[in-house]
Image (cartoon, rainbow, N blue to C red; front, side, top):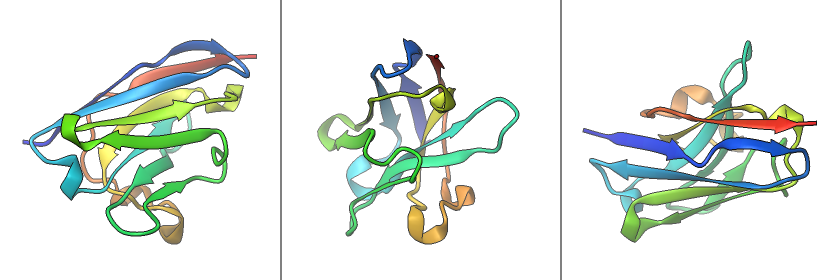
Length: 125
């Protein structure tokens, strides 16, 4: 059974940084595309970033490009999202998921397949 658990969220001031972690079980990160999406109150889910096996290996939504960095430690089946220069509009529940829709699909949210509980990120102005 695929299981994913995101953690590391919290309250931070605008301009600050946070690092989210995602631990997976039931599958190998080395063999699957994995990524992050977020959902703000009253808004639709939005793809944020992802990692795939082939090139381009990483992908970012335009709204976070240059501020967020995704990485993975396949030996630990753990993925990270380093978020810097945070803005109030980054406030959302962040989920890690299998799949990497990326910019070529227009960040088709339906291509994220499995996800677990998210972690709340709140950025104050």
